[in-house]
Image (tube, rainbow, N blue to C red):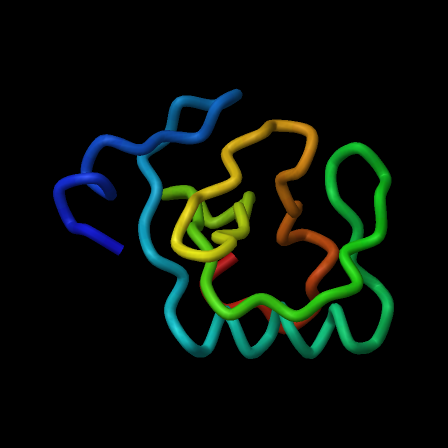
Length: 89
């Protein structure tokens, strides 16, 4: 993702800056998705593994990136509290 764009992006509800989710976080998230234990804020199950994602500064929310486009909808955020081994939470 373009660094200049990333510098401008914030969480739609908390207004916290977003950063690229590192591989350890992405691995933990995808492991939980594969186990069927991940849902979005609106209650919809996240069933597809993510290739790329953004995380808030406090590491409490993750937003998926689809085809290079961040999906910054508060209802579609993923709460990291539901991911047992999410690093840094």
